[in-house]
Image (tube, rainbow, N blue to C red; front, side):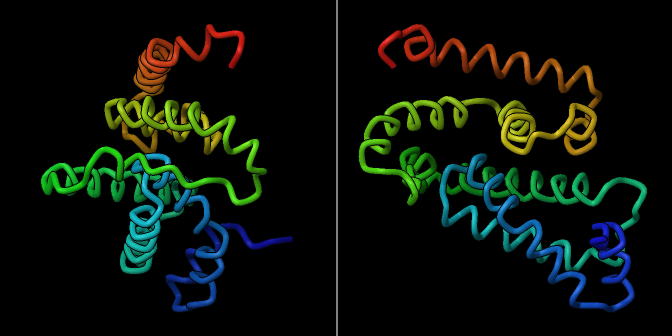
Length: 186
């Protein structure tokens, strides 16, 4: 039976570096994907993921297993994404196109990439245009498949607030993408 994430963090607190490395292996891709979906730039997402694991490494001694490890991990990821978004807004040197870069799926055929690239760009742009709290709620619910309670814990809001965030986000996405939703040819 595999060791639980909480147990690995407790092992890491006792000085077992291999426990941290195992957590890194388990969650690196998920953190990168979450950061990419929030920030829209793969290089920045890699940097944010590195920052997340540095934060986990340095604050590991403060970890308490009263919440699940994934809730703690996504809280750190959310904070790192928000920090990066604020930093980019302050610098204003990054264009919207850079934030919404499109990295093709290496496993897709050229035809699949051509057919989906416009819609993919529009969906990414629509998600990117959402307010930060709505954007993160959508990413955590839709892509990370977390429960409303987990999202509430991560965002430090109530479950009804999560429901409201998701409702408003989906409403905004539906409005922005209505041409694609209503079109029978797409």
